[in-house]
Amino acid sequence: MGKHGNFKKADIKSSKNFEIKNQDRVDYNLKKPMFSFYHMRYGQPECLSTCEVPIKASVTNTLIRLSQFTWKDLGLNRKDALGFEIIPQKQFNVALPTPPITPEVDMMVFRHSRGGRIAGFREDNIYHILLVGNKLYKH
Image (cartoon, rainbow, N blue to C red):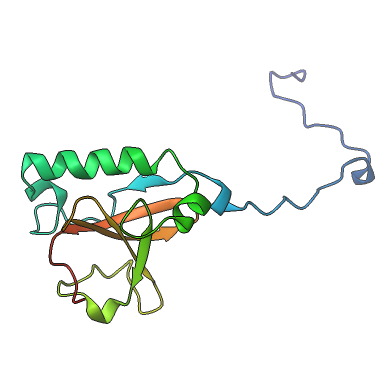
């Protein structure tokens, strides 16, 4: 502290002693997914909150299983296993929330049961879950 109880400013004599390095680019495909319900419309028909307990359990179990793999691993799996498929927005039977869904956002869909789907989008290693249901899109 200085004479008057104030903190002293750091005495930096030369900036050439400090080198700012560019951060290495993160490969999110090598990271495990994190899941977010931030954009899910609470209480709507395609919201997890309106599902029956067995469906909630199935979705939760699927998310736990998915979280054990990297995005790269998930991309190598078949869509009917622990993989996913990309579904064009125009095939969806239900309204997608705007924002965050804009025309260039790809919808990524996982299966949680034979007919059950989890639809959302990926941002880095975060999978934003938007919809849960059986008849979300046309095949």
